[in-house]
Image 1: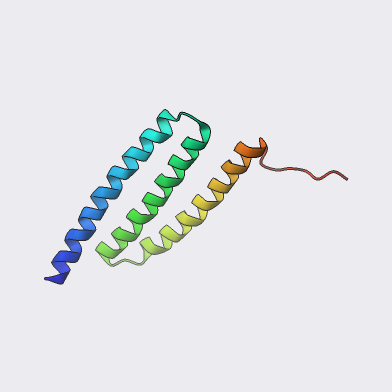
Image 2: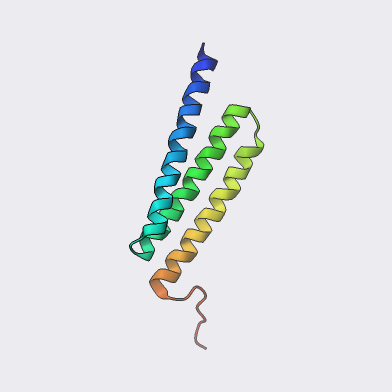
Length: 97
């Protein structure tokens, strides 16, 4: 009984998170500003990580957890890079000598 309940909850969460990805995709496309688009992309990355973890729970494969950790690191680095570009206008700054 509890395995059936867990499978149903995981399936429902997968459907819910997929719908949230679509809503975030709308925010990425429509904007209206660049920071809104960055937040939308970050939310999509977070949702994809959640989908990978839920899929790992559903299938019992740990490889998806490892993939979600790698996606989290890449998502964090890309968010920091885009935020620096939006605020400073340049990603790599050179120090004056």
